[in-house]
Structure formats: C-alpha cells, structure tokens
Image 1 (cartoon, rainbow, N blue to C red):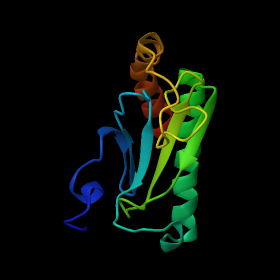
Image 2 (cartoon, rainbow, N blue to C red; image 1 turned 120 degrees about the horizontal axis):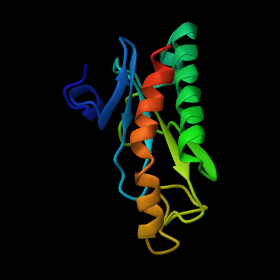
Image 3 (cartoon, rainbow, N blue to C red; image 1 turned 180 degrees about the horizontal axis):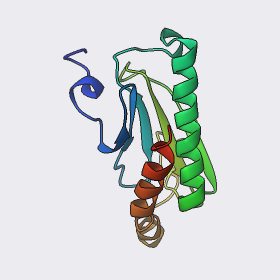
Length: 142
C-alpha cells in the first residue's frame, strides 16, 4: 500500500464488485455514465509487474466489464485505456462511448467537441443500475 496513492487509500469510485486481487468501480464521471475502472488491489504500476496468471485474471475481468457494458449500455464504441500517468497504480478504464459524447470521436480526456446533451446523458444514466447488477452477475463467476 502506498499512503500517497488515491487507489490505495480509497476504492477510487463507487465499488461495484471486488475480490482479493482486484475491484471494479463506477467512476461517476458526469459526462460518461457507466464509465468503469478495473483496479488491481496491490500497488503496482505495470501489467508486467503481475504474474502471467494475474495478467490473465486482469484482462478476463476487463473483457467481462466490456461485454457487460455492451450488453446493457449499447454504446457506439467501448474505449479501453491503461495510462497510469497521473495515478501510477495499475488500473484499466472501460468507457462506453457515444457519438453524442462531448469529446467524441476523441478520447474522454480530449477537448470538448460539442455541448453536453442532457437527454442523452439522462438516457444513459438510467441504464447504470442495470449495468451494476449485470456486472455483479458476471463477475461473481470470476
């Protein structure tokens, strides 16, 4: 554990599911309903810091989150990212993307391309409870 790391000292968002190795959270990014993170519990920075079996577990979990997101949120695209430049604690972003997003087709960290679409956000936010339940259902088998 690193006392200066926000992913060591907090869940990093709304905890949806966890086990001894990792956890899945909702990031609660207002412009991106359903934005999830898969976070390795131990403070490590890189995928290569994990044993092969651990890497497999991490990526299987990322893929289960992506599929659950597709099943429930019906995005135009799902973005996967493992940056760690700002928070060097191993985690993957799993982000449902829509053409109505303020930054689409750029990344969620890009400059806005359009104004926020309240109707679209409301429609996507309404799907989040079902996403949380579906994640619990599929990850319970992890």
